[in-house]
Length: 387
Image (cartoon, rainbow, N blue to C red; front, side, top):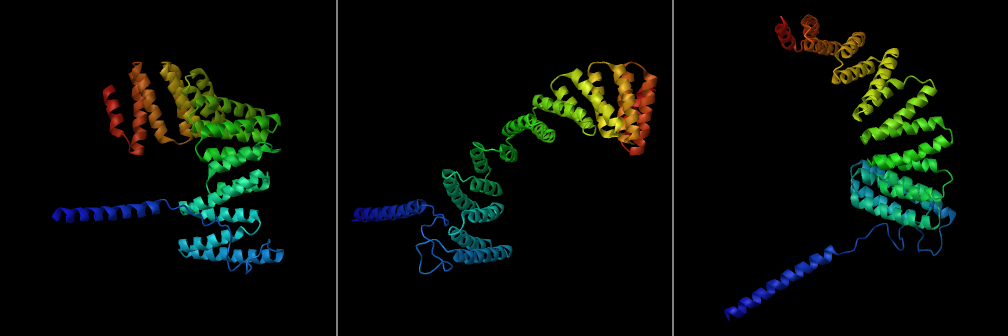
């Protein structure tokens, strides 16, 4: 009897577990319902009883006005902090917009989708994206280019950049004016940190600008490429881009951008191990920066130039560069820079057993250190070691 009773209890318990598991599975497998996917829209704002025709112009105008009022209500509700209720109102608006002009619906989808992205409402973003995707498919089938452009821009607003890029690429296939499309694609790739793809797109734009002798556009694309190659840490490509920029600026007698451009070129040459080219670039950067009173660039160029010569044990040339650097730093009233340069001059004299010159340099450094209240003991020790 006890065994039979225990068996019944076990069977009953097993049945309860199975029922619960079945209920959970059923709930988990419930199909996703997008509130924007409806076969027939029923709403008090639509004619009643339902009509089997398109809305008349007057009915469309009235509905448009009512939908604008719905949007205002949703916006006010959202600003009051009732985000869920605001989206309920917006969903009603978006469903009803399917009865009107599709371009107006796409505009509204982008507007609400942007809010969904900002509020990190992934389910709402998915719903709106799915509706936009359906519109995109129909527009592609009908080659509705203006609508596709609007869909792509809506994807951008919602940060669905992969779909925006795909639509722009579709529009590129037979576009008579590919430039703005390529610019959008390049910008989107850049926003996704896909620097190689962005650079490849800007290279296409650059080729177009060159073919059209459009110098302004050429400079713009070269600047973008310069930035991209720097972010991608690609000095080889960066050198080519900067050399072309420098050539154009020189042809235009535009001196202003050249100091920083030559300094950047010097850094790239140095990274690539092209030390002679780096030296020439730093000299160009220094001369042009000095003439334009851009003392920070002039100072940095001389500092890097001195490091190159010191690396090659060309100490006398290095000393000459540091002496010139002192003049730049004095003009810029860069007391910290002066202190460090005197220190380097002292080290080189000390390395060449010229103790008196080293002592003089370290004393100058100490005087500056005292004015800055910085590293006084460090320079005093160096002086004591020479006395």
